[in-house]
Length: 239
Image (cartoon, rainbow, N blue to C red; front, side, top):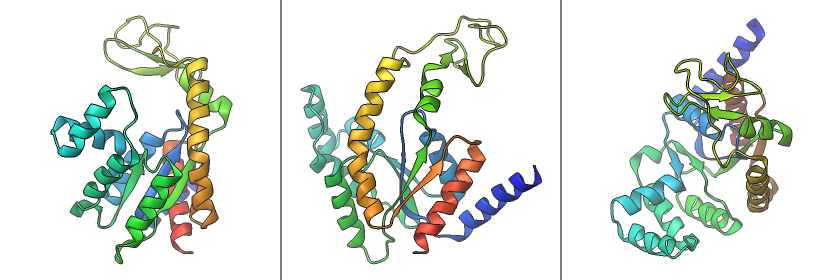
């Protein structure tokens, strides 16, 4: 236990000392990317920038970009890179991005990665983008996704493999029957993984080729994974 706590404290201390800059946090469905993003936001005091959040905010506030995106989505089409890029560009002008930011869901494509690199390199004060991927093997991800069960009353989340309820299928708190989300099936997960790999491989190759990519083991406790990400960012920043 002592060695584990030393590792965690060293990771936190390292995180406080380095300037994070722009970080692309990657991870397959079920890898814990969202949880880790929140940990890093707390540690570094920098924002998490999600293109999904940007799209929803622009649509909700009726911005010109939001109106354009909404019309495209209503027709069942994907929002083009040009609109997504512009939303990101506006967000990066906010003062809370000066020390850095966690990118979530962007860049998804090689074109977006090229645009982002050009945008960042055009700002002399900005560090280059580094990419860190949280790795969990396929079977581990499958168990995380297909094992999830939710209480419809208190929204507590269980996992039949790693965090089962005391009584199978019943919420410990409410006594309600647990439910499985319709998209938490192996078939849906397999399709999501196929799409994720196809989409992200070119982006991974892009940053790996520039020496700005690292992978961390995501099949460990949350604090240990966070410490691993911090250490990876430090290594990439020291190159």
